[in-house]
Length: 462
Image: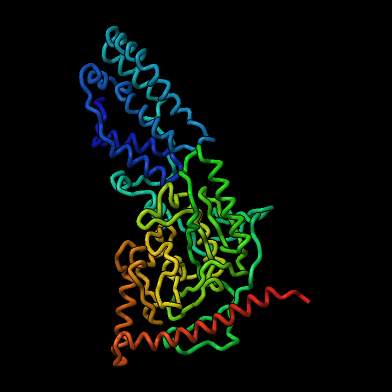
């Protein structure tokens, strides 16, 4: 048997067999990328002769694969027996090589082949347990990163709304059919949800005072902007302490409906039927509808972490466990309340400042949010209704938070604003004046409802 080569189909098949011991699709992809793309040391001298011995010649390569596989296996599950045996054989390799030489000298090449065949029965090289699914092409897998892997899984295995339900609940938790586990030990009440749904086309037609809605219609994703420590085992105590502090602060100030900590644990803080104080002055359009002051109409989901444009996803930003947890939570909320994909957005895209008519009073997740990995369409392509329907503008700081460029949704909103102005025979600034008047009327209506809602909650019961 010749030595393994990185481009040799035999080596590729062997790597694929070893990868089947890794149950997590994302981790399996990382393993495949590492092993198929790693450079190979040249083999010279007496070691070149050893590579021609059946099974034993590839023992060094197999041992390296065992080391890599073990890094991706859950600690609590231990190392499978076949992998332990391969590692043991590698540690005994000198004795095995000597034995092979003696057999070759005594019985010839045929005896050496028989020994190799018998040994291979106990190795992973014969039959790693099949995972029950078709084997993807290794070349394609090697070009996918962890976020792409989560997206790929979801595109095939994502459950439709009717397949997501509350399967079990107990003291301090809820468990759902899609694997979502929501911890409820920190949950609290808040102000009742009361909000209006405005028609943006034409925007000046306001809803009646009796058309008050109370069921959440969307999700706003936030990042906590917490001070964070490196995500390593030696910081385990500090990580848990920081997460607990964020949860208690969020509960005491009723900041979010959900918090996902750095370990991927999902906590309900303010119950769904109540409004958390997460969105402030904000605006988002969903089809022909527009919602203002989204704390009342949208559920707030916060990732523990810190937002750095272009570096928001990673081990020390928001990580794979958080993304997976958020994906499952999003499916639960969309199933429970019939929330549209178009109504799942980030804080930086909805935040507005009415005092200066600028977008982005808060800029977390203006860009860089892993929408696709969450099973959602990328909202960077969604038209910003605040710009096109109500005349808001933006400054350089807002663009800087998005990496310094104008994204498709912003460009589309500006184009619609210009088209609207041209149809009315106005320039853009004149059109903004008209649209701003529409915003003030809608904002005043929702703001009055927010004040009334807060006052009702603060008054003592008779």
